[in-house]
Image (cartoon, rainbow, N blue to C red; front, side, top):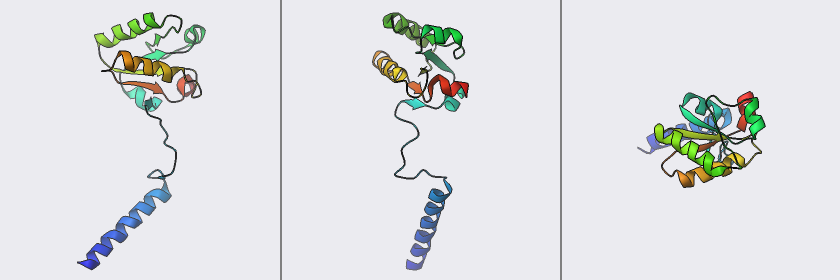
Length: 134
């Protein structure tokens, strides 16, 4: 019985070590790739989401995600109403993006949306529009 326990413990330790060394499992002390409330572009693209563009109006005019809603920071109530109307027609994930990963606007707007739409799943896009262009 003790021998079987040792064999199982050894195999478990070898498997865990292999996973850590080969990169199959993240290192326990490593920073997480995603912060709370973030989503990767590759994951968002396969889902039917409502895209919310939090960049400037000129950047939105230059290019945006398909069917994206423009979030006008000068008129947050109007933008919120547009998003709410879209979500009420067909409840789906909402993904907010801004220029790049350093831009905190998408996270701020996502937080506001979570307050106003507590039943919706709302994320900010990791990497922002820069991730989309890569």
